[in-house]
Image (tube, rainbow, N blue to C red; front, side, top):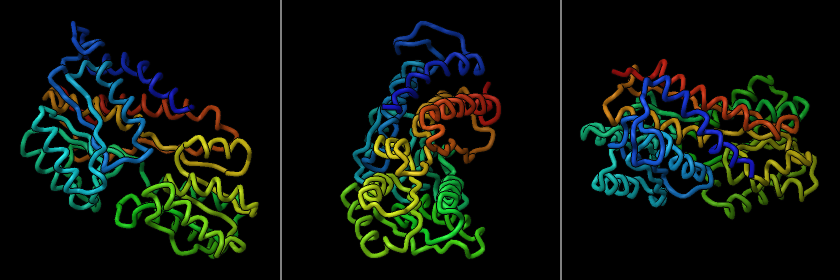
Length: 347
């Protein structure tokens, strides 16, 4: 699996991070070099189960070891319900966790969760998804710039289509702020064609599970397949479903996906998928845990509270499918440097 190369590369980031932060190695019970952060217990809490978050598990374990954290845990039991996610967070607080990286279920209500954590002196970050609107009440948001990533994806699809035709957009939960940003990014790319590309109505709410995505893609191909020139998917499950369905259909549809599931990468290699947009979940979890630990330990504060920071997105085509991880690892290394140089103010 290509994804395994990233956690292995993270250890190489640690020495540079410690030097930049001015940390001196000490004896530690955490299994790695101590950084004065052994009082910090980091919890990474996605809104529910989803393949996108699986790299957070290894990244949390790596962060615990590399930074000498008191603990780092991953909990996805919220089941895509904001009240249940809040219950999970409250339970973790009661068990001594004092730094939280959260992918909120509700893009509006999640700010209340961050406010409650702040009132109790607990560090928090929005990871993978920023709150809707202009306000972020977490200490920072480290997420893909989803509008920019969707714009790149739509541009790549239009290029594969030869600059004209009919484009379909498959995406996630309509009320998710990320979904709305992705819709905006795709529309921006289509508008730049000055009418050469026609965008069908967005197909939303099909990322909850692979079965839902497969049915939606099958229905789309059955009803519109003969007129569709290109498909851009900006959500994980529809991307995987479309990669299989388009290939099996034999229809001349150019497809650009999101994320780096092995099905998608194999389809890029055999030419049935034109490209995908890889995100950086490992960097979000690893670098996010580092920054949260520095905040929770009171060693540092944010230079700009609530800062929104792009964790990176990367166009993967047949030309770079074997090497794109290098670009992603380099982006995570730069994020570490940026936090120490720009985003954190440390005593």
